Amino acid sequence: MNEVQLSARLRKVASYVPKGSRVADIGSDHAYLPCYLCLQGIASAAIAGEVNEGPFQSARQQVAKVGLEKSIAVRKGNGLAVLEPGEVDVITIAGMGGTLITTILAEGKDKLEGVSRLILQPNVHAKAIREWLLESGWKLVAEDILEEDEKIYEVLVAEKITDSTTSIANKEKLLLLGPFLIKEKNQAFQKKWMMEKENWKKVLAQLDKAQSTPELEEKRDELKRKIQYVEEALKNE
Image 1: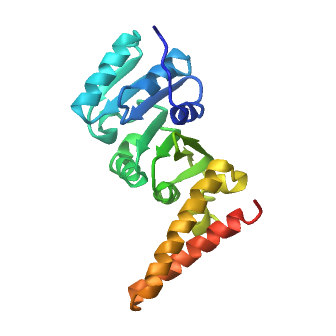
Image 2 (image 1 turned 30 degrees about the vertical axis):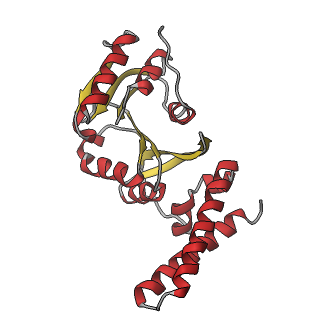
Image 3 (image 1 turned 30 degrees about the horizontal axis):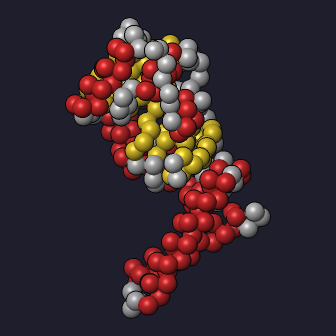
């Protein structure tokens, strides 16, 4: 049966892929996303990259199952090493930590030549991605946050900056919470940051009992700032 059922988070990632794109999905697992994009006529061609042998074989089998061997190349390799410069327009990386995603992008920077859009879905540490994008000449153009199976996921969409206007007001706050997500403040956003705030308050309470050191005071100040950012963001809800 030539159809692929995607999870809600991967459907959200797919929704940001421009029609006619050549897409590379890094860490593709079963290649569900590339298969879906090609079957729906969204991607004109795709590459599924996977570093581990098991998922690599699963991806090959899935591509063969839906008859897309001519449209999707399944390649084994680490991060962007599976790509040639200029081979794709869009790169998707989903289901990893934000720090790992930034490492993949940084180590494969030469492979980003010709790429016009990055669609990134970190499971944690989205802030690390926002910081890397800002420092590396990419601009956030959209964000999403959703809950699925009692987990909250963020999706970040970035495009290459063609001008030099990269200044961000309230930089620390917006990098933490997301410049688009903080405007919408949907239910998943509110739930995520309410939980984070309560966790930070517990940590702060523990730090208050500890003997003061310069490092401890710095940590306390950082937590207080984060709690203030979240309270400011949620106070109108």
